[in-house]
Length: 421
Image 1 (cartoon, rainbow, N blue to C red):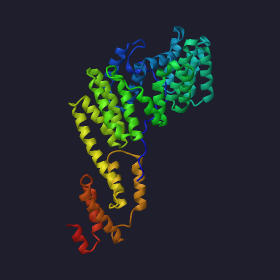
Image 2 (cartoon, rainbow, N blue to C red):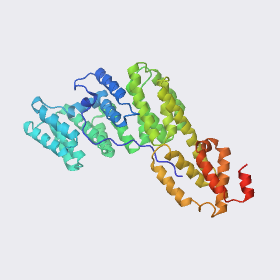
Image 3 (cartoon, helix red, strand yellow):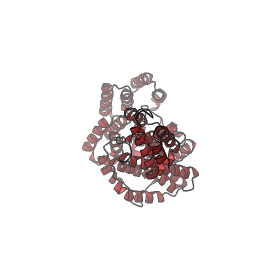
């Protein structure tokens, strides 16, 4: 078996969303209100039962909790009173996927306010969603030209954000670099953008170095810093810096211990749980175990967490033994392939399952009784793993017993007696 592919986040949905509407708040809501409504939304749509709704809620909160990103978002949607109805309808149309109609309304708004650079940014984002590169760049060029001097950097930052949300991380990174060169004093405000770009591009070494500068000092931590620790853990996993886990775990545990407010704990748990479930659903149980352990630290009395933790820990142990089997020269390769297939197909729907099945087809011997040498090799391997890998054997005992019986049937009496002891 080849090494499994790296864990990658799913791309963001390409749509213009009303984050205030998602959280059920007004555009002038305070940070306290934003946090309160986020907690209420998470309680109503927890990630384990409503993953899609939770991701939408999380996107809204991650934007509005951050003063810089909220300012960019507000600037994108800011317009004068006389444009209010037209622009609101245009954004609603864009959010529901009616991009041509939305663009028509934005152009109508330009006739009322031809110097409104925010409208050009909206048209640029629509163009990006339509894969119209030329219009995207031209509209942002005009927006940058029309924007007052103190807003030009904001236009660039919004352009980078639009590219990130449009799955164009390489281009977004180029814009971020341009901002950094022109406005070096803004670098701290760009770090979250760099984090997202490095994640999307799989540039984990650069992400790792950047995150080291973002870890909050003891005493200056806040609940939102959980995302920094999550990114750090994921970077460690992808770079296979497992020797550093003890130190990272200790720092993360100290951070979690500092979160005492019940609502802050819910927010932190929601962030950790989505990581846990994302790893779980792609069959990466060692990584999932990291996050369920942290969740259990935050809320050790949660019965659901305890049960999930026990299940993940068992799966992680079985997975570890199957990987050991795969490297064991005394185990016939086909036997390892069977173990991989049974393990993953019983838990998650992975591409790796179909790949394993193809390998089984290529390496399977003749049916039982046709080649007795193969039959005995398989029987011998099953006997071996029963002793050497009892957890794997017990987990799939019915499968092993059926395969063992099938191949043993055609062996001679002495062999049947020997292997049946």
